[in-house]
Amino acid sequence: MPGPETPPLSRRHRLFAAGFRAIAASRADLWLGPLARGRGLILTFHHVRPGAPGTYAPNALLAITPDFLDRTLAMVRRRGFEIIGLDALPERLAGGGRPFVVLTFDDGYRDNAAHAAPILRRHGAPWTLFVTSDFADGRGRLWWLELEVAIGRLDRVRVPEAGLDLPARDAAGKSSAFEAVYRALRAGPEERLLAVIADLCAQAGFAPGRMAGDLCLGWSDLRDLGRDPLVTFGAHTIGHPMLAKHGAAAARREIGEGRARIAAELGRPVTHLSYPVGDPTSAGPRDFALARELGFATAVTTRPGHLFGPHADHLHALPRVSVNGHHQTEAALAALLSGVPFLAWNRGRRLNVA
Image (tube, rainbow, N blue to C red; front, side, top):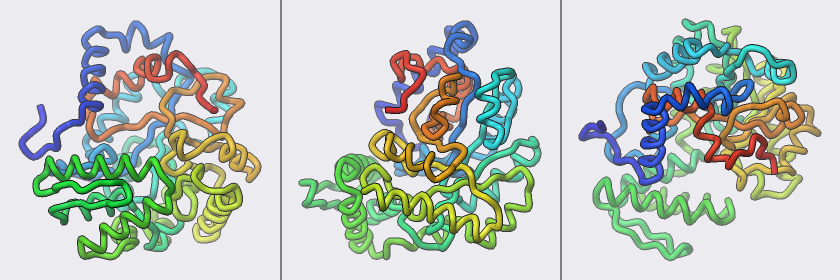
């Protein structure tokens, strides 16, 4: 059960948790798994850090503990999956064989090197870190975290453009305000989202664009991390935009120049891409085509699902499975590895590339 310092789950996440418990209780992960499970899956991680979130922690879904990462890797192997690097995925996907898991980490956070890398090394597990070049430069907009901090400092949140004027005096009020502002801004242009959050940051007394220097690995840190042969670096654009909200020329520049900068700084080829945010409103067929034209071997979304044989023809629109900080339980992990939840979430579709 959640402790007194744990943020309450939203209705959506309560439904997820109930579904995971139902799958575990019915053992559907075992008897339905052979039908639902694909040839493999790609797991998505963001932060890995110790400690529990506070009662106001709207981005807690993006963070798991080192202990849960350790338990995740142990369960993956206990369930018969082989952990492979992303370089090996196209051949394994086309050829079949033993089910596999690929481990990916987005954005390039310092806690990945401090807390995740030692655990991955102990398990001998290859992994890919997707780097946003502006974040490695110590700039760029971690806007979802800026929004969290700004609302955490404000007693009232006003966004006239969205018709919002919300109290934010306690954790519950701040959580509700974050959800309302986030939902309103995500529905519109990214330029407006960034401008509104910059204004909220100013109201809260701090400058936007400063968090990356504290939270993300710099180029020297990345070169040090790259001495580990288990690490592969992938591209995550220049500034982490939602590509589908921008024109083709801007998207091409973000993808291509982001990769070029990483390759130049780290002295190695960069052949894999992660689309920022990665849902259908952020990356679509045009962006998949750009990744293919620019010569990436694979590109990953955040569309949920396992990998099936037909994905071999859609290597630039690969689904992933998020390891969610709200659901750090073996029941949740077993369900995700089985593929059973995606029968409902994807309405029986194995491909989602439109």
